[in-house]
Length: 123
Image 1: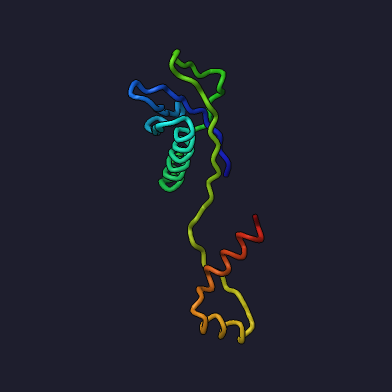
Image 2: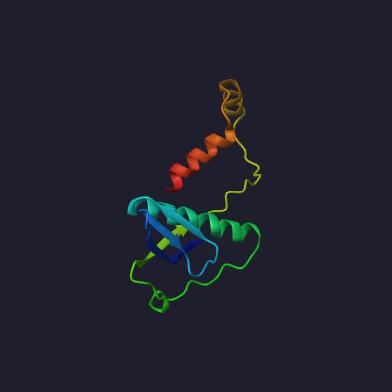
């Protein structure tokens, strides 16, 4: 799932930026530089939404950015994240016996090799 939320960035008196999400009460972060703040904002958003999903809580609909009021020392930036369900699932696969024997001899993890190959193929 892809999500886009408005984050409010406030210049901190000691430097850097404090970040909050009007639609996600309790979701806060901070960064020493604007680059760090943007990175931390994305990380905080991802973790917050994953938490809501894990707890089977409702994910609020994002507000229209035009309806969010900010103070003079604040600005709004849209932050996007993509949430992937990383839970492991079991699959039955078939492969030639000789290949299975080579995998065992080499000490490779068949699951890891398959995940890596699929990641490369699907990218």
